Length: 380
Ligand SMILES: Cc1cc2nc3c(=O)[nH]c(=O)nc-3n(C[C@H](O)[C@H](O)[C@H](O)COP(=O)(O)OP(=O)(O)OC[C@H]3O[C@@H](n4cnc5c(N)ncnc54)[C@H](O)[C@@H]3O)c2cc1C
Image 1: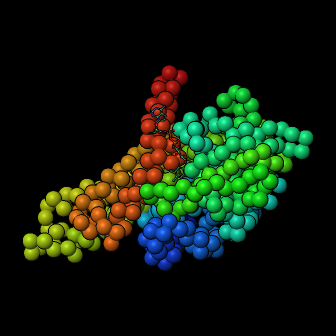
Image 2: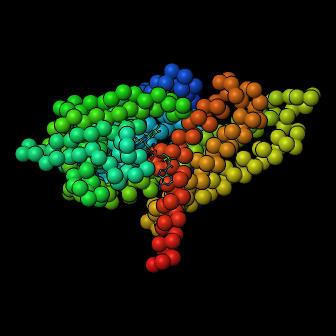
Image 3: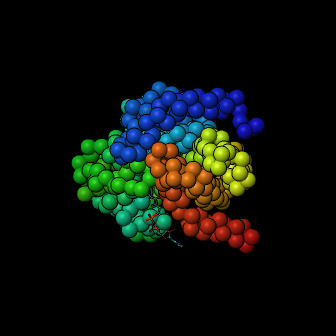
C-alpha cells in the first residue's frame, strides 16, 4: 500500500519470505495431520514478531494494527491455521498483557512469550456463552490466599500448547463484573480439556481450558476487579482487524493461483484464461481483493492513529471474511475437479476462511454492532 511506512514495507517482505520457506511448504501436511507447526512458531520468535505490539523494553516490536495486519496477510496466504495460532498468541494474549498488565506482570510474562519460549492463549468463550461473551459464567471467588476459579473455557486456540492463559472470569453478579487472570500451566486445579476437531484451521490447535477450584494468587489478577469488560471490548477491535488480514491473505492467494492455472490448463485446445467467463471470474475476484486491501489497511491505519474504533473494526470483520469465502469458492470453481481435490490448496483455504466468519464474533454479531453504533451516533 502506498501509505505503508518504510518499516512496514520491510516487514511485509520479511514475512513474505518467511511464509514461503516455513509455512507454505508444510501447510498441506499440517492440515491433513491436524498438527501444529511448532518449529515455525519458534522461528517467529527469532523473527521478532511474537510481540509485534509490545514495548521494546520487553523484547516487543512496538508496532501497531497495520503492522500486525501485514503479518496476518503474508502468513495467511501460506497457512491460515498457523496464522490463527500466531494471532491468538500475539494479539489475544501478548497484546492484552501489554495493554492491561501491571509492570510486574509484563516483566514476568512478556519476555518469554515474545522470544517464543512460551506460548500464549486467551480464554473468553465458554460452552454456553459465545456471542454473549459478557454473560460468561467461569467464576473467580476471593479466598484468603488469592482466588479460586471454577468453570470451562471452550474453543481456545493454542490451548494444548499454551504455557500462559489470559482468562476472563466473573467476579460479581452484575453482567459487567468481569475480571481477568493470567493463569500459568501447572496451576493446581487447572488443566486442558479435550482437543476440538475442526473442518478448517486444522493446523491451529483448539481445546478447552478446565478450572476446577483452580488456585490463583492475587498477583495474577489483571488490573482491578471488574475492569475486564473494557479490556475485552478494546482488544476485540484489533482482533477483528487482524483476523480480517488472514482472510485478505487467503483471497490474494486464491487470485494468484487462479491466474496461474488459467494460463496452464487447456480445454477445447486453448488455455482456459482465453475464455471470457474465466476472465470475468478472475477480474472480479482480483478487484474485490484490492477493495478489501484498501478498506482493511485504511481502517488499520486509522486504528493506529486512534481515530476510529469498534464500528469500522466490525465492518472489516463482517465484509472481508465473507468476500474471501466467496472468492475461495469461485477459485475452486475455476479449477474444476482439481479445485475440489487436495492437489491444490484452494479447498483448504475455503475451509480455513470459514472460521473467520465465526471467530472473534460472528457475521451476525458484527451486523448487530455496526447497526447499534450507527443508530446510537444518530441519536446522540
Ligand atoms: C476455531 C475456533 C477458534 C476459536 N478461538 C477462540 C479463542 O482463542 N478464545 C476464545 O475465547 N474464543 C475462541 N473461539 C470462539 C469464538 O469466538 C466463538 O465461536 C464465537 O464468538 C461464536 O460463539 P458460539 O460459537 O458460541 O456461537 P453462538 O453464540 O452460540 O451463535 C450461534 C449462532 O447464533 C447467532 N447469534 C447469536 N446471537 C445472536 C443474536 N443476538 N442475533 C442474531 N444471531 C445471533 C450467531 O451469529 C451464530 O450464527 C474460537 C472458535 C473457533 C471455532
